[in-house]
Image (cartoon, rainbow, N blue to C red; front, top):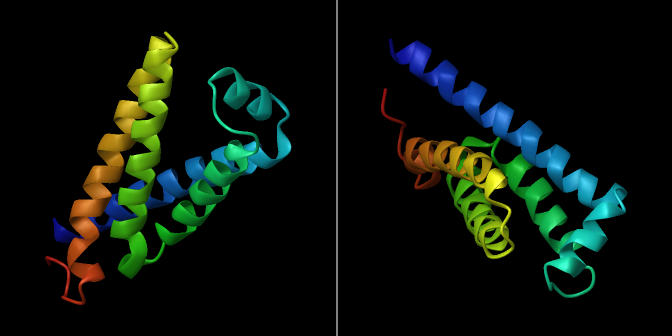
Length: 122
């Protein structure tokens, strides 16, 4: 059973990493992000900062020792995204934000012992 749980955790981390690398990379390549962040009232090029944090956070999710702080960083970004969508009446995007935040919370909790140098719960 523990092996299945570990496999599920790794699968969750890999899926989240893929999603955040994709989302972060699109902020560097998609012209729509500059327009969207401007419409939301954020400073010029702030979308690039968020994109870089998403990519770095995604890659750090794949390292057990850094997975917990990376998940917490990405949760903060998702909270910002949630508030942004709520303030701009984009409620249809909130379920995705909530699901991804919940999965990141699971990773942060499950990988916490790895971050502080203790053996994971086995």
